[in-house]
Structures are given as C-alpha cells and as structure tokens.
Length: 325
Ligand code: NAP
Ligand code: GDD
Image (tube, rainbow, N blue to C red):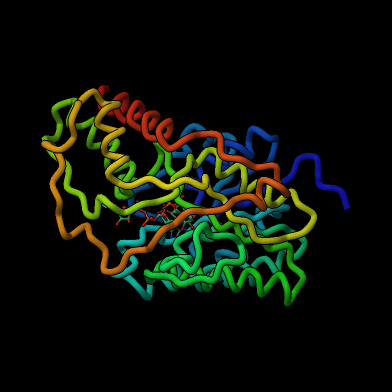
C-alpha cells in the first residue's frame, strides 16, 4: 500500500529539543502534525511557539493510558514518534522509579494504545546510546550487547526491547532509533554542552563569573539534533521496521567542548572560569561511547552533516545572541 500524500504524524515530547526540530521538519514536508503535551501550571511551549498555528496539540501523559488512546484516536496518525521521556541521566538516580514509569513502561503504554487504535501506523521509539553504558565493544553497532549504567539507561533498554517485541509479536511497524548524544541551541540548559555554551556567553556578557562542572574527561559522540531528526523520519519511510544506530563516529571530551566554547565566545583561556564540583560527578559513568552508523548510511542514506566543532560554535553564537538582547 502506498504512503498517503499528506501524511499525519503524532509526536510525543513535542515540547522537547527533538520534538521541536522534528515538528518543523514534518511541517516543511507537508505533514499534518499533531503533538502530545502534558499539563503544567505554566505552559512551556517556547520551542514550538513559531509552529503553534500549524500544529495541533493534544493533552496526554505517558502515565495515563486513557490519554494516549485518545491522542492517537484524535490524530489518526500514519506515523507516531515516541520522543517523550524523562531524559536527564543525572536525575534518573534521584527519581529511579518515575524514570522507569516514563521512560520504560511509558513505551509499552504507547505501543498498546497504537495496537488498539492505529495498528497500521508506523512507530518510532527514541532509544539511546546510554543503553551501551559499560561498553562491550568499540564502536557500538545495532548488535552490540547492552550494559546500561544508569536507571535511565536501564529504562531505555526496556523501551527498546518492548519495541522489538511488539514488532515481532504483533507485526507492528515499530522501529528503534539508537541515537547517540545530539545537541543544539534548543538543548535543555542542564545538559553539559548547552550548560557550557550558555555559561561561556553569560561570562562574556558579564552575567556570570564562572561555571561549575563535573568530569571534564567524560567523552561522548556528539552530533547536531537537526541532522538526527532527519534520521528518525527516514527510518519510518522504510517498508520494514528495524533498529538503527545514529552517530557521528567521533568522540570528544567535555574539556574539548569547554575549549571550543570559550574560544568562540572570545574569552581566550577557559581555566580561570571553570570550577570542579563533585555534585556534577555521576555515581557511575558510561565508557567509550562511539557509534558506528554505517547501517543507517547504507540503508537510509543518512550521514551527519555537522561536525562537533561547528556544533559547539553555532550553539555559542546562538547563546551570545540570546543573552546579548
Ligand atoms: P527533552 O528535551 O528532555 O524532551 C523530553 C520531552 O518529553 C518533553 O517534551 C517533555 O515534556 C516530554 N515528557 C516527559 N515526561 C513526559 C510524560 N510523562 N508524559 C508526556 N510527555 C513527557 O528530550 P530530547 O533531547 O528532545 O530527547 C527526545 C527523546 O530522545 C527522549 O526520549 C530522550 O530520552 C531520547 N534521546 C535523546 C538523546 C539526546 O542526546 N538528545 C539521545 C538519545 C535518546 P515537558 O516539556 O512537559 O517536560
Ligand atoms: N549534565 C552535566 N552537567 N554533565 C556533566 C557535567 C555537568 O556539569 N560535567 C561533566 N558532565 C559529563 C557527564 O558526567 C556525562 O559524562 C557527560 O558530561 C554528558 O552529560 P549530559 O550532557 O548530561 O548527557 P548524557 O550523555 O548523560 O545523556 C544525554 O545523552 C544520552 C545519549 O547517550 C541525554 O540526552 C540522554 O537523554 C541521552 O539518551
């Protein structure tokens, strides 16, 4: 059966970094875009403000099965992107069971809601390189065994396996995208790259005089979120659901990030501004996370377009503009 000319998509987590970029991409491609949002005492829709007239929002929460069924029923999606999760690794040690509910069992609730109301739709699960944790091989591929090192990673492993299980048990078109870290000017301020680029800009503008960080030697395979949401879309255009690693294949340290950001902000040497604070050191760290995205290159034609250095420099430029008024 051919794909509809003007497809409908439902995005959970549309108010997050990836949700905002994905919504923009799908609107540009002519999709009717629906998003699921949860109620808060103050609306926080900044990332999708510019799209508000062109998307439809539905109230829903990953903890509430009724609301998931209703959101799918109302949006009648051809494609469902399940991006909603408690996504901050550090907090998953503070709220381990809530993380399991949102980030793990929430995936089953979404799959059940889809099975009941839109079994022909295609489903994307936002899986994570954090599942590789204490890595079993370098670089990591779709067949590398998982060894999660945080309650978040454990919950994501469950979400990944239940997606594969529903694909195999019920024949659902359910795909798991195993994405390595991806950042942007829309990244939450608690994640390390954005924390650094924001502070570099704030120090330059005289709004702060230092930044406190944890492990400067931690390394990640960091890419640009805008490139990565394109991979999500490409995955759901395939006739067969599958698993794909999305990564740049290069790793950098937190120290590298600080160096580039402070240089881009015109601050020169970073050492005088950086304080080490044990509160930002994790109870357990992941090892050498580097992804091998050759399957995505081969089957999806996907390749990262933005280098780590370009990414950090564009994030600093955005924060300089944001704080410069
Ligand atoms: P994010 O900016 O933290 O966005 C998370 C989204 O989930 C927000 O829209 C949030 O809504 C929503 N959400 C959280 N709990 C919810 C609940 N109980 N019910 C409904 N919505 C809920 O995360 P992101 O960076 O865009 O990441 C998107 C997804 O990819 C996440 O699943 C993340 O774990 C995964 N992932 C991210 C990366 C990365 O490097 N960015 C890498 C691999 C995988 P509010 O706005 O209301 O809080
Ligand atoms: N957040 C933070 N704050 N991290 C710090 C700091 C700090 O002050 N100092 C050092 N780090 C180190 C952390 O210890 C970690 O090793 C690394 O910087 C990256 O931390 P985050 O930016 O918080 O990201 P993450 O890798 O834990 O998780 C992100 O990527 C995952 C994919 O592997 C999140 O987006 C997850 O949702 C995602 O699944």
